[in-house]
Length: 138
Image (cartoon, rainbow, N blue to C red):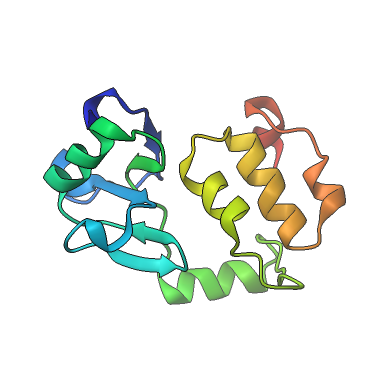
């Protein structure tokens, strides 16, 4: 059942092998041994066999990613100082069920991006067009 799910690009860093480069987020919670709650209602990792068994009956609520994006502390600090990133803080807690659903229910990358910008009180940027041609200019 897990092999039938889409594989998402988590970022350009793939640690070691395909096996170690995969990660998954899900809503199945402690029913998957070894999983870890990263936000209320959003879990990562855990036993892939157990997750696969749960996916047979309920394939929703799982997002599998290959790779990740990561920065060294000094690199991130330097990029923040140079203005490479938009520094934003959310105005209110937004880790509700709608947010969790956006994370794992297969929403488009544009929807995820727009949701994140709205949560950071940047609705104008959420309306900015996205796409390879636009992103190449940024």
